[in-house]
Image (cartoon, rainbow, N blue to C red; front, side):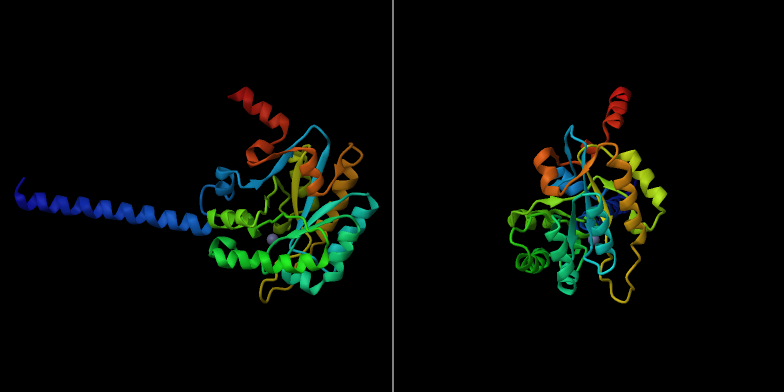
Length: 278
Ligand SMILES: [Zn+2]
Protein backbone atom coordinates (compact mmCIF):
# COMPACT_ATOMS: atom_id res chain seq x y z
CA UNK A 1 0.00 0.00 0.00
CA UNK A 2 1.37 3.39 -0.92
CA UNK A 3 1.53 6.23 1.65
CA UNK A 4 -1.27 7.91 -0.33
CA UNK A 5 -3.52 4.87 0.15
CA UNK A 6 -2.70 4.71 3.87
CA UNK A 7 -3.70 8.35 4.36
CA UNK A 8 -6.91 7.70 2.47
CA UNK A 9 -7.83 4.73 4.72
CA UNK A 10 -6.90 6.53 7.92
CA UNK A 11 -9.09 9.49 6.99
CA UNK A 12 -11.97 7.12 6.17
CA UNK A 13 -11.64 5.31 9.51
CA UNK A 14 -11.62 8.51 11.53
CA UNK A 15 -14.75 9.68 9.68
CA UNK A 16 -16.50 6.40 10.59
CA UNK A 17 -15.42 6.84 14.21
CA UNK A 18 -16.69 10.42 14.23
CA UNK A 19 -20.00 9.24 12.76
CA UNK A 20 -20.37 6.58 15.45
CA UNK A 21 -19.64 9.07 18.24
CA UNK A 22 -22.19 11.53 16.77
CA UNK A 23 -24.85 8.80 16.46
CA UNK A 24 -24.27 7.61 20.05
CA UNK A 25 -24.45 11.18 21.39
CA UNK A 26 -27.67 11.85 19.48
CA UNK A 27 -29.22 8.66 20.86
CA UNK A 28 -28.22 9.54 24.42
CA UNK A 29 -29.64 13.08 24.13
CA UNK A 30 -32.88 11.82 22.55
CA UNK A 31 -33.23 9.10 25.16
CA UNK A 32 -32.64 11.59 27.95
CA UNK A 33 -35.03 14.25 26.77
CA UNK A 34 -37.78 12.22 25.15
CA UNK A 35 -37.81 8.94 27.06
CA UNK A 36 -37.08 7.04 23.83
CA UNK A 37 -35.44 4.12 25.58
CA UNK A 38 -36.80 0.60 24.98
CA UNK A 39 -39.65 1.31 27.33
CA UNK A 40 -41.22 4.31 28.97
CA UNK A 41 -40.52 3.34 32.56
CA UNK A 42 -36.87 2.46 32.16
CA UNK A 43 -35.43 5.36 34.19
CA UNK A 44 -37.70 5.13 37.23
CA UNK A 45 -37.47 1.32 37.23
CA UNK A 46 -33.71 1.30 36.93
CA UNK A 47 -33.41 3.57 39.94
CA UNK A 48 -36.47 2.39 41.91
CA UNK A 49 -38.04 5.84 41.75
CA UNK A 50 -41.70 4.97 41.18
CA UNK A 51 -44.41 2.66 42.49
CA UNK A 52 -46.21 0.39 40.00
CA UNK A 53 -48.37 -1.82 42.23
CA UNK A 54 -48.21 -3.51 45.63
CA UNK A 55 -47.77 -7.15 46.47
CA UNK A 56 -50.50 -8.49 48.71
CA UNK A 57 -52.64 -11.57 49.18
CA UNK A 58 -55.71 -9.43 49.83
CA UNK A 59 -58.14 -8.97 46.92
CA UNK A 60 -57.75 -5.19 46.63
CA UNK A 61 -57.14 -2.94 43.64
CA UNK A 62 -56.81 0.82 43.18
CA UNK A 63 -58.60 2.60 40.36
CA UNK A 64 -56.82 5.82 39.41
CA UNK A 65 -58.24 8.55 37.18
CA UNK A 66 -56.00 11.10 35.46
CA UNK A 67 -56.55 14.53 33.88
CA UNK A 68 -59.71 15.70 35.72
CA UNK A 69 -61.69 17.07 37.30
CA UNK A 70 -64.24 17.17 34.51
CA UNK A 71 -67.70 18.76 34.88
CA UNK A 72 -69.51 15.83 33.21
CA UNK A 73 -67.52 12.63 33.63
CA UNK A 74 -66.04 13.05 37.12
CA UNK A 75 -69.49 13.37 38.77
CA UNK A 76 -70.73 10.41 36.68
CA UNK A 77 -67.83 8.27 37.91
CA UNK A 78 -68.32 9.47 41.50
CA UNK A 79 -71.98 8.41 41.42
CA UNK A 80 -71.02 4.87 40.34
CA UNK A 81 -68.25 4.63 42.95
CA UNK A 82 -70.74 5.76 45.60
CA UNK A 83 -73.29 3.18 44.46
CA UNK A 84 -70.74 0.37 44.91
CA UNK A 85 -69.10 1.84 48.04
CA UNK A 86 -65.77 1.91 46.20
CA UNK A 87 -62.95 4.42 46.67
CA UNK A 88 -60.53 5.75 44.07
CA UNK A 89 -57.69 8.21 43.49
CA UNK A 90 -57.87 11.16 41.09
CA UNK A 91 -54.68 12.67 39.65
CA UNK A 92 -55.87 16.17 38.84
CA UNK A 93 -54.48 18.76 36.43
CA UNK A 94 -54.08 22.17 38.09
CA UNK A 95 -55.83 24.03 35.26
CA UNK A 96 -58.88 21.80 35.72
CA UNK A 97 -58.78 22.13 39.52
CA UNK A 98 -58.82 25.87 39.05
CA UNK A 99 -61.90 25.62 36.80
CA UNK A 100 -63.84 23.03 38.80
CA UNK A 101 -62.81 23.28 42.45
CA UNK A 102 -66.26 22.23 43.70
CA UNK A 103 -65.98 18.86 41.90
CA UNK A 104 -62.59 18.25 43.49
CA UNK A 105 -64.00 19.14 46.89
CA UNK A 106 -66.96 16.79 46.41
CA UNK A 107 -64.73 13.85 45.60
CA UNK A 108 -62.57 14.45 48.67
CA UNK A 109 -65.70 14.79 50.83
CA UNK A 110 -66.81 11.38 49.53
CA UNK A 111 -63.59 9.78 50.78
CA UNK A 112 -61.65 9.61 47.52
CA UNK A 113 -58.11 10.80 47.10
CA UNK A 114 -56.95 13.79 45.09
CA UNK A 115 -53.33 14.04 43.94
CA UNK A 116 -51.04 16.06 41.69
CA UNK A 117 -50.76 15.51 37.90
CA UNK A 118 -49.00 18.86 37.09
CA UNK A 119 -50.60 22.20 36.31
CA UNK A 120 -50.75 22.20 32.49
CA UNK A 121 -50.02 18.54 31.59
CA UNK A 122 -46.71 19.01 29.74
CA UNK A 123 -44.28 16.25 28.81
CA UNK A 124 -41.92 16.80 31.75
CA UNK A 125 -39.07 15.08 29.89
CA UNK A 126 -38.87 18.27 27.85
CA UNK A 127 -38.59 20.54 30.89
CA UNK A 128 -35.58 21.57 32.93
CA UNK A 129 -35.58 21.30 36.72
CA UNK A 130 -37.10 24.72 37.34
CA UNK A 131 -39.96 24.07 34.92
CA UNK A 132 -40.66 20.68 36.50
CA UNK A 133 -40.76 22.12 40.02
CA UNK A 134 -43.04 24.94 38.91
CA UNK A 135 -45.59 22.51 37.41
CA UNK A 136 -45.70 20.51 40.64
CA UNK A 137 -45.77 23.46 43.03
CA UNK A 138 -48.50 25.39 41.19
CA UNK A 139 -50.88 22.45 41.54
CA UNK A 140 -49.73 21.81 45.12
CA UNK A 141 -50.80 25.35 46.01
CA UNK A 142 -54.31 24.70 44.63
CA UNK A 143 -54.59 21.30 46.30
CA UNK A 144 -53.28 22.64 49.59
CA UNK A 145 -55.98 25.30 49.65
CA UNK A 146 -58.66 22.67 49.00
CA UNK A 147 -57.80 19.74 51.19
CA UNK A 148 -56.39 19.70 54.71
CA UNK A 149 -54.17 16.64 54.33
CA UNK A 150 -52.85 16.50 50.80
CA UNK A 151 -51.60 13.07 49.70
CA UNK A 152 -47.97 13.37 48.58
CA UNK A 153 -48.39 11.35 45.40
CA UNK A 154 -47.42 12.66 41.99
CA UNK A 155 -48.01 11.18 38.55
CA UNK A 156 -46.17 12.64 35.55
CA UNK A 157 -48.19 13.16 32.33
CA UNK A 158 -47.81 10.24 29.86
CA UNK A 159 -45.84 8.43 32.57
CA UNK A 160 -42.75 10.28 31.27
CA UNK A 161 -40.13 10.66 33.94
CA UNK A 162 -36.46 10.93 33.04
CA UNK A 163 -33.73 11.39 35.64
CA UNK A 164 -34.33 15.14 35.90
CA UNK A 165 -37.98 14.49 36.73
CA UNK A 166 -37.37 11.74 39.29
CA UNK A 167 -34.61 13.80 40.89
CA UNK A 168 -36.80 16.93 41.18
CA UNK A 169 -39.63 14.92 42.77
CA UNK A 170 -37.24 13.23 45.14
CA UNK A 171 -36.01 16.65 46.25
CA UNK A 172 -39.62 17.55 47.07
CA UNK A 173 -40.03 14.25 48.96
CA UNK A 174 -42.83 13.19 46.62
CA UNK A 175 -43.40 9.55 45.65
CA UNK A 176 -44.15 8.96 41.96
CA UNK A 177 -47.14 6.68 41.46
CA UNK A 178 -47.35 4.91 38.12
CA UNK A 179 -49.68 1.98 37.33
CA UNK A 180 -49.33 -1.58 36.15
CA UNK A 181 -52.66 -2.03 34.35
CA UNK A 182 -53.41 0.44 31.55
CA UNK A 183 -56.91 -0.07 30.14
CA UNK A 184 -55.96 2.26 27.25
CA UNK A 185 -59.16 4.31 27.54
CA UNK A 186 -57.11 7.19 26.06
CA UNK A 187 -57.16 5.28 22.73
CA UNK A 188 -60.97 4.94 22.85
CA UNK A 189 -61.33 1.14 22.68
CA UNK A 190 -64.64 -0.62 23.38
CA UNK A 191 -65.72 -1.39 26.93
CA UNK A 192 -65.36 -5.12 26.13
CA UNK A 193 -61.79 -4.56 24.99
CA UNK A 194 -60.94 -2.72 28.23
CA UNK A 195 -62.55 -5.48 30.30
CA UNK A 196 -60.48 -8.07 28.40
CA UNK A 197 -57.28 -6.15 29.25
CA UNK A 198 -58.32 -6.08 32.90
CA UNK A 199 -59.18 -9.78 32.93
CA UNK A 200 -55.70 -10.62 31.65
CA UNK A 201 -53.94 -8.33 34.10
CA UNK A 202 -56.02 -7.95 37.26
CA UNK A 203 -54.37 -9.14 40.46
CA UNK A 204 -54.44 -8.31 44.18
CA UNK A 205 -52.52 -5.05 44.57
CA UNK A 206 -52.99 -3.76 40.99
CA UNK A 207 -53.02 -0.05 40.18
CA UNK A 208 -55.36 0.58 37.23
CA UNK A 209 -54.99 3.62 34.94
CA UNK A 210 -58.11 5.38 33.64
CA UNK A 211 -58.98 8.96 32.62
CA UNK A 212 -61.93 11.06 33.79
CA UNK A 213 -61.02 13.94 31.45
CA UNK A 214 -58.54 14.95 28.74
CA UNK A 215 -55.47 17.19 28.91
CA UNK A 216 -56.23 20.87 28.23
CA UNK A 217 -54.68 20.75 24.74
CA UNK A 218 -55.05 24.02 22.84
CA UNK A 219 -57.95 24.03 20.42
CA UNK A 220 -59.12 20.44 20.95
CA UNK A 221 -62.63 19.89 22.20
CA UNK A 222 -62.92 17.81 25.34
CA UNK A 223 -63.08 14.11 24.46
CA UNK A 224 -65.98 11.97 25.58
CA UNK A 225 -65.11 9.74 28.53
CA UNK A 226 -68.45 7.95 28.47
CA UNK A 227 -66.74 4.61 27.78
CA UNK A 228 -64.59 5.13 30.86
CA UNK A 229 -67.74 5.80 32.89
CA UNK A 230 -69.26 2.60 31.46
CA UNK A 231 -66.18 0.50 32.12
CA UNK A 232 -66.06 1.65 35.75
CA UNK A 233 -69.54 0.22 36.28
CA UNK A 234 -68.51 -3.02 34.56
CA UNK A 235 -65.34 -3.33 36.64
CA UNK A 236 -67.17 -2.82 39.94
CA UNK A 237 -70.08 -5.09 39.06
CA UNK A 238 -67.68 -7.83 37.91
CA UNK A 239 -64.95 -7.75 40.53
CA UNK A 240 -66.82 -6.82 43.72
CA UNK A 241 -68.89 -10.08 43.58
CA UNK A 242 -65.54 -11.90 43.22
CA UNK A 243 -64.52 -10.47 46.59
CA UNK A 244 -62.44 -7.53 45.36
CA UNK A 245 -62.39 -4.24 47.22
CA UNK A 246 -61.51 -0.96 45.50
CA UNK A 247 -59.43 1.36 47.66
CA UNK A 248 -57.50 4.63 47.54
CA UNK A 249 -53.78 4.56 46.82
CA UNK A 250 -52.97 5.39 50.46
CA UNK A 251 -54.91 2.35 51.59
CA UNK A 252 -53.39 0.12 48.89
CA UNK A 253 -49.87 1.20 49.89
CA UNK A 254 -50.71 0.58 53.57
CA UNK A 255 -51.92 -2.93 52.90
CA UNK A 256 -49.19 -4.23 50.59
CA UNK A 257 -45.51 -4.20 49.79
CA UNK A 258 -44.71 -1.53 47.18
CA UNK A 259 -43.28 -2.77 43.90
CA UNK A 260 -40.80 -0.48 42.16
CA UNK A 261 -40.80 -2.32 38.82
CA UNK A 262 -43.75 -3.12 36.55
CA UNK A 263 -42.46 -6.63 35.82
CA UNK A 264 -42.88 -7.65 39.47
CA UNK A 265 -46.60 -6.74 39.20
CA UNK A 266 -47.59 -9.36 36.64
CA UNK A 267 -50.36 -11.67 37.80
CA UNK A 268 -49.08 -14.62 39.76
CA UNK A 269 -49.96 -17.28 37.13
CA UNK A 270 -47.98 -15.28 34.55
CA UNK A 271 -44.93 -15.23 36.79
CA UNK A 272 -45.34 -18.95 37.52
CA UNK A 273 -45.57 -19.70 33.80
CA UNK A 274 -42.41 -17.74 33.17
CA UNK A 275 -40.62 -19.42 36.06
CA UNK A 276 -41.50 -22.82 34.57
CA UNK A 277 -40.24 -21.73 31.15
CA UNK A 278 -36.97 -20.40 32.57
ZN1 LIG B 1 -52.52 12.78 32.06
